[in-house]
Image (cartoon, rainbow, N blue to C red; front, side):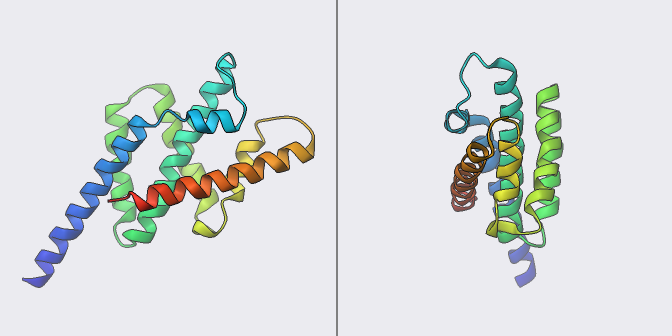
Length: 157
């Protein structure tokens, strides 16, 4: 009897985490992230690409939070999210974001929440310029990604 109650609570928590993240992803406009990267409204192509990148990164950060909170069920919860996301948003950009989530997950998984610099360096690599500016942008992005991860983790349930 005890195991049944425990499984029910886990399923409820996982379902709540899934619903919370779906709502968060839908409501996020990524204006702060685009401003941090100094991407203006008239930079249409770069803006579209960065929105794909940031959505994918948010998905990967959520998956990282799932790994910490639901170590046994994280893979299944993320798979359920991915399947539902593909069905709800069959457009090209959403598919690209989901694909990017896997790539960001590969960057984040080895170090976990200890190091967000690989993802930050990747995002900074979209901008050409001197190395000093790229390092500065990479550091700002790494700190912002850490803050975003903490926010996602704190609001997981």
